[in-house]
Length: 278
Ligand SMILES: [Zn+2]
Image 1 (cartoon, protein in one colour):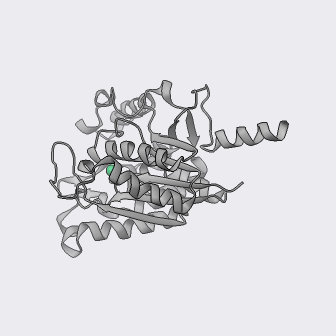
Image 2: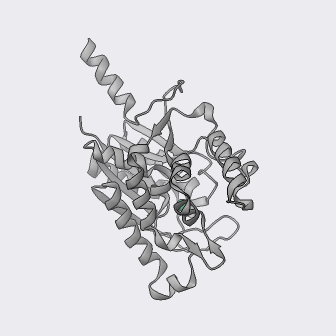
């Protein structure tokens, strides 16, 4: 049965890194995948040469469209709030998403959920992954919108914190030495592995995920060097696969099992199976 999945993200490029493989898989399996982004990501770092030719917000929306095409999205909606910037470098944008009244944002998102008759909404974990204020707000606004719309299935796109720390320890041995990538920084970020309900192997969809990541050209470099997205895209193929072939989710109301489910629609499929059995 074809389902409609609305994927709610904070900035252009979050969709590609966090769940691009899952989105590509869902669209390849015939589901309707709708990408909703809260902000244009205009406060993202980018090299001066890139910012000189076009306003960054405008460029990032074009990149978002290209990424959505690579992932097979049926629709892209941008809510148009201001990018708040990182907690230690706030933009003070008058319309900053992180400062928005949760109910106001939730009504905007609920409208999309209603138009789409969404079966599934994906949001972020309560920590906002790595703690960006706009990511924390995606969690709050997304939860509230799902309540308003009575969306049947809500999943938090996240990362298994322990798996991430293992990968970071391994790549630090090779090339990527950066204090940003110190495994200890992640002790309270993303999700405790005991909360993870879904681990999706997206190996078959790595070409689409990579194409989506590549679409966000402005986010690959900054004036002081290559950024995380650029570093990941430069990894040799086996390392790229090791780092990016899994995606994780926490489904609200589902008890985590070992191994975790490997399909974000598993709860629907189990319910369908039970109906078929009876
Ligand atoms: Zn983001």
